[in-house]
Image (cartoon, rainbow, N blue to C red; front, side, top):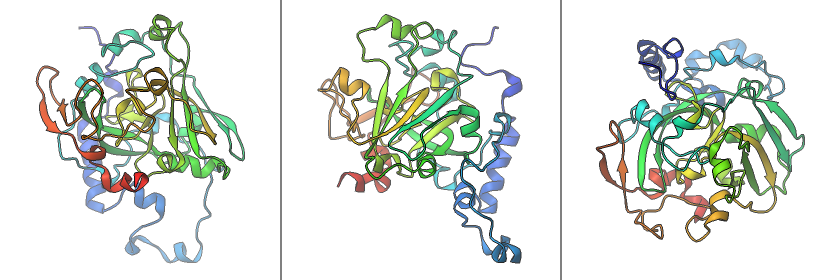
Length: 330
């Protein structure tokens, strides 16, 4: 049977035993990406020379980029290594998602043949000390990648549980040094109707797709810039090569295939808030008591192993991440 578009070649898939052993080792050792990045290493692992001759902090410009074939699988962040539900099967997640640049249906994988996420560049612009354009491999290869298990909630009242790989957006923001006048981050996806039939079919939509966050949201520890999923690189229908994940917000806030990250003073106009402001707000946090104008958000269809059967669950405030983000909206 021919390989389907959402599948990756078998030779590129991580061996299951390696994947599980890597998780077991990290948990058993009590180590993870957060500990390594922050320097919170147990005393028993420190050598005397570590205390007498501390290593200088390496900025993004000083680091030698790691090649993409060494990015996955990434270490699991122990703070986000378990969920209150099983992970959604990878096949299901690849068959049922939204990417409006290609189609308004869920069968995005049918329309991605012409799209090439490599080569790719990401522009850092606006109110920063040193704006520049990065090659995606050069940028991501200099960041510390980690895997996190997150709940994913769509505004259409369905949900999944996904293992994302990426790096905290705060890590990038700290490196590019926004000016004090920067109050929001404006992010833009690609625009190319010749390879994205959704852009061709709907010229009335406010292309390119733009999303935005306040600086407090962008620097929140939950906010990820994502490059991988299920232990390998993002397939196109998930937003390759770089997408945004904010798990306490509805999924349409998760901009895909990012080409520009701009620091601005005024709240940016965003895609769905511009197209239908009475239905989609700028914040778009998951709030069960705030219904969509056309349906309730009090419960959700959790999809794990089959599109034809699902578990009905109560919607959690901020999608279950209240302890991390409630203070942002006090």
